[in-house]
Length: 300
Image (cartoon, rainbow, N blue to C red; front, side):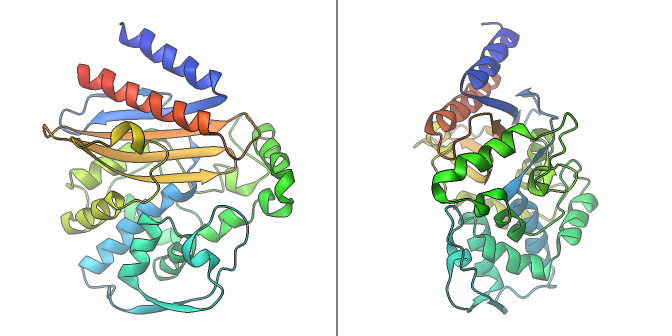
C-alpha cells in the first residue's frame, strides 16, 4: 500500500474514534521517521515527568543531589479518580530522592514528582532541556496543577461536564480557559519534541550517558501498560514508556527495542472529542495507529 494513503487511512481511523492525533515514529539508528501532524503543540500532562527525571538524574550523577537523602512529603489526600501513590497518602512520609524518582517516573506519582520539583524547580528542568539543545517541550509548572481542573469541581456523575468544557473551549491558537489545557500556560510539547527527547535518552550524545541510562531504566519499569504496551511489548521486543492523561488528553511516548537490535521511538499525543473519561475503544485505536506507523516505517 502507498505510505501516504496508509497514513491518511490511519488519520481517518483516529477521527472515527473521536480522536485527533499528533504522532511520530522514528528509527533511532537511521533517523527515518513517519508521523501524523507531528508538530502540533499540546499540553503534555505527566509526560513532563520525563524531563524532570532527566534533570534529577543529571544532578544525582554529578553529585549535586544525594540519591539517599530523604525528603519529607506532605500527604496529598487526593480522593478523585486518577492520581496514585503519595498523592493519596493520608500522612506525611520521608522518602529518599532515588525512590521518589522511581515513584514519579514508573508509577506516575504526582506527589513524588512534586517533591522532586521542590528540589529541581520547573524552570531549572526547562533549562536542562535547553542546555541539551532539546527544544519544543516547555516545563512550566509542577504536577499539583493537574489536580486543579474542572474535574475536581464536579460530582463523579457529572464528570462529562468537565470533559465537555475541555473539548469545546479550545481556541484556534490552542489557547484554553482551563490553564492546564492552554499551551501557553501548561507544560506542553509536540510529538516531534518528545521523540527528540527519547532519541537523546537512547542515543545519549546530548545528555550525560549515566543519567540517560537511569531514565531509560525507570521508563522500562513503567507500570501503566494498558495504552500502547499491548501493541508493542512481546517476548521479542521491549517497550519502555511514559503515559500522560488529563481530561480529554491521552498520551504515551516510548521506545520499542526489538530482538534484532532495531529501536524505534514512538510518540502518540491525542485529544478526544468524546465527553467521557473512560474510552477503551479510543485507547485501542490510539495504540493501533501507533503500531501501524511503526510497521510501515520498519517495512521501509
